[in-house]
Length: 633
Image 1 (cartoon, rainbow, N blue to C red):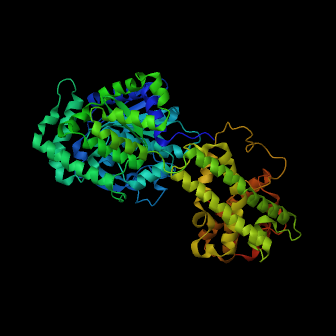
Image 2: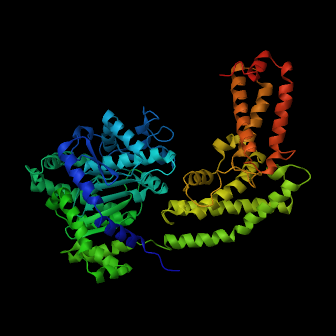
Image 3: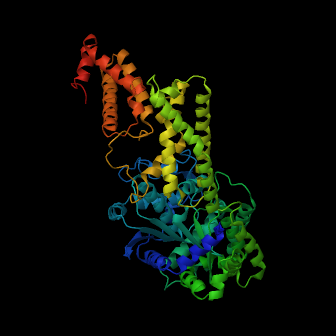
């Protein structure tokens, strides 16, 4: 097998791609215009079928103080937000909040407030409505503080698109943006496979992207002066220049050394606290000699330190205003390379050398540390494609476990007791056959949990969850094995302790596989899932079917002893809804024959309902009225 490109080489390819396309130029030009034309606002332009949204880096500093530098839960952003403008469940960042405890994913309070100030304006809502309606690719971009607003806007729209199949692309380019959140936020973004949607340009001396590594309280006065001078220059680039000099040399030096101390401490630390700011996405480090991309968190932090350590107090301030010239020069780095260099850069060591030279020209003492840092970006252990290949081998090795469960299902479906697959396992005895199926179920679960764990740790290709082989394999596994998980959950009595399976017992892997299946490419060949069936499915097409049956059985038992008319109304409404769902599944032949086995839980449920309805005259008039749909809402 041909060796896969390292993480660094992939990022080098990204840098070359960006340098050879107009994306960076178009986004930067709109950023510069927004700085001048719409302070505290944004501009929208459409180029080549792509919508660009640029947020001004000139923002009200009143919105930053005293919040800036303080982390708050991302969930606070959803307070009072209409579900129409939020994510799939009404939360603005619902996809990120679901990845972990709502209060662990945190962002900078001041930057979040600036985003919300724009988000709640009618102009922004109207423009976003048009963008969502067009379903075209979107590029959010911004310089300085505007970059942070662009990042939050991208995360919001990506969360919104979670509920849409085949959503358009959302890309974010920032220039000299501060960091916005903590490690759980970075982890949640990578778990959603969104890291590749973000590219942050950072000049090698600019203090702004390093600023939030340091506590801001001791430097508040210096920071206010600096931000005001930057914003005046950005807003009037041809009239006012170099207003960073409003800070005297001693103040510049104090500010530079203070921030450098904390950047160095972060780079040296092996652990990141929950209240620390952490980068995510691709970082393109640029200088007058070119650029290099890095996407590994540890390497990004070390590069932020190494390049900043070679700076000076004045250049750390002036460099924040030089992104326009850097964007022009980035493409030249790749266009001016000789053919030999381009060919040679396909090797890892040559790529590291070229990249380190791009950001350390004239500072030979920095070449070796930067080379070492870029080597860190090379993934430790097997590369993603190799891991994927090994998982494919592992998938073939567990095929016999799956085959044994399929054989067990066939035996259950043909058994004289007519219990069917689900109920046979739920009521199983102590036979070796039953025990073997139980163990196979556990081993298969461990395999797929490992797949998800590797995917969320970025140890697999970015598009792994969209590859047909794995989407169909996970769906097939889910349809075969989840009924066994449901049976075990109710057999063991777990539902009495925790509640019903769907809300309290379902494994997270099944929810992830549901998402993979919903988002599968509708143009895949041989996808016959939407065609009418001429015979019953080999596996029930809703793996949650038996969990819904168990809940319906519980409702039926509750009806027998419930006397409150309102509660009865709710119970019978739930039962009727289930009957419609199950009837539709059977009529479309989307259930396996075990569902219709004479003694299955489903058939016994139908019989219980038939008897219950026959006994209606013995119940109170309110119950009869419920079934007669007289009190149903």
